[in-house]
Length: 160
Length: 291
Ligand SMILES: Cc1cc2nc3c(=O)[nH]c(=O)nc-3n(C[C@H](O)[C@H](O)[C@H](O)COP(=O)(O)OP(=O)(O)OC[C@H]3O[C@@H](n4cnc5c(N)ncnc54)[C@H](O)[C@@H]3O)c2cc1C
Ligand code: FES
Ligand code: FES
Image (cartoon, rainbow over all chains, first blue to last red; front, side, top):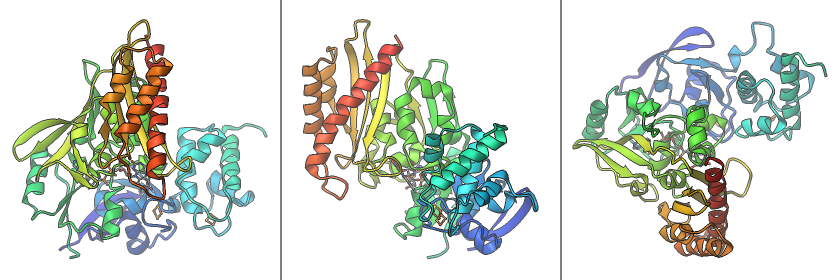
């Protein structure tokens, strides 16, 4: 069968691609558009390494079909920094060493950004529940949670 | 094999035609959080995938003038959770829905998908049943309405006929002195499948006596259960200890669970009674607070 011709807005840019029905948004990002920031940890919705925003909703790109994305607005980790300027979360993750191997990091950052846009003053419990779908086998989560909390404090302008 | 068609009808009629026309192998796509996993694992091999999210009726969550709600079959959990009206009226339904998966899964997971995937452990289902929800079904012979408890036929199976799909659900208006609740037991605190799930909805009179109740159990039989004996055990009581023991016994007696790594038959049965009592307590507190 002919492939689907899809037009979407990706990280602010109009983007077109061809895909088959079976290809997920994650397959499209990585294999068709060469954006390999979003990772495939499980391809079954469990790990969150493929987290992206579709029409302002946090979702697993491995559980969205590429063909569903016609007319949609998609944001991936590649759109997070503003040129050379890292997003405050990215900067904080570096400063506080909130990553080790880094495989989970793009998904964690996309998910954490979505949280802070909804709630700029989350409790530790709220951060942990929000990120429960982002698995990390290296850090033990504490540094991730602390980095998200301290970014939130910085962005609110609280002094430490 | 590889050539699966992908269609996104904008009307119910178009969707029904596509479902009916496909040589027996059309699959509806709502949030895809079950469907895509099954597709990837080659558990299903559809010839056409019908994305119902472009049909307005499947995407709307409306509070009607009589206080009831119409919930589109493809509305995502995160969308409902952001609504103050339904969250205040039917906290049990919203909590059960919200328990489905992570934040990312919530961005997509629908009630229609949770119900029609027909896992005996689907979290939203006992809460929908307890609340008295019905499903609006469209098909080749027009529309019909069924109580949620009559939709599933067994693990992975529904009573929907060829060409039929759920367009939306009706959730009754909250009775002025009513309350609902849902609890599940899982081995961890997040992201797991229910060992037992229990939903309850009830009404109280001014003296705190239960005037009506509906109690539903999930994950303890092939389909969701409506436990009438449990409701009868508490109707006309003020949830005195004897009534609570009778409720516990009725929940246990209704169970016909499987043994698996998440829980033995004995464990699931005992937990069903415990959850029944806890859920009824929460629902009654909620009903009382609202009088
Ligand atoms: C990581 C992860 C965690 C999860 N955790 C939970 C959990 O804790 N509890 C739980 O209950 N579930 C859980 N699930 C399962 C799943 O997320 C839910 O069942 C969800 O509600 C399915 O909804 P959906 O819209 O994504 O369905 P889809 O995947 O789109 O559809 C599911 C099935 O229903 C059919 N269908 C969908 N809509 C309709 C309709 N309107 N009419 C007729 N048929 C229809 C589809 O054809 C398909 O067979 C989890 C899944 C994942 C990946
Ligand atoms: S790759 Fe998508 S959740 Fe793991
Ligand atoms: S840093 Fe390695 S998985 Fe999180």
